[in-house]
Length: 275
Image 1 (tube, rainbow, N blue to C red):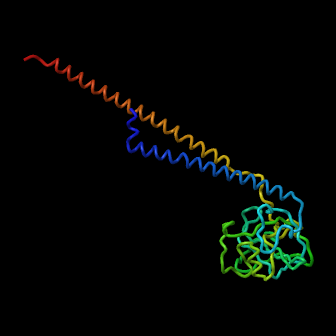
Image 2 (cartoon, rainbow, N blue to C red; image 1 turned 120 degrees about the horizontal axis):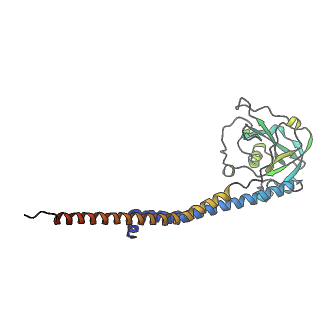
Image 3 (cartoon, rainbow, N blue to C red; image 1 turned 90 degrees about the vertical axis):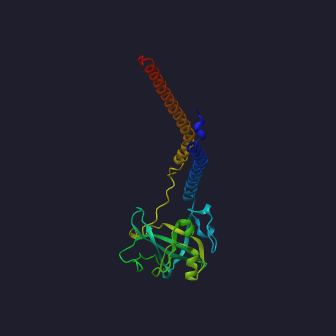
């Protein structure tokens, strides 16, 4: 009754099921690893945001990438803003994650002559994207800024294409190496995302702290993939049993029909009138 499993249709169906099971198991572990990464990152963000601020030079240096474990660390920097080399970063969203505008990026020159890029916050784009927007002025004189240390942005890490031919003093990515080349001044690796002091009138709008409470749906997705993997053999068995039952019923019906035909033929022969 199970010889139908050797048919072309059932061989293909079985092979597809055998392929799907390990694929779904692997996809489940991929989602599990994403969940674990998210949990670890949330822990790192929370710990670094709660840590005591340290001088920015303890975390960053010219030509050195910011280590991942120092991301979101609170740091302080004291110096004078170099507004002549201030730029805006295009296509950034406000805290509501809907309004599109610019980040205001201003170098802060430290006492030793090095500079650190400070993301002073978000401003709306305005009507003419071909011109440098009206930017709230940076504080004059010596000032101290507190913020979160962030790594340099790259296209590979951010997914943002670094377009060329932009209007003057507009960039797509926050990158200390590019700004060091542009200004001719040594820049500390990474940049400072300002949290204090609050700008007068709330402009620019400070970038909010990253969300580190949500763990996302990755664990649920992992469980779903594993349930799908378990459902494949169960479904295969159900289909096999249904096919066997249908074939048995068809064979029984065929045998009953043949028996009925044979009985009818015999009866007809018996009732044939004598000559």
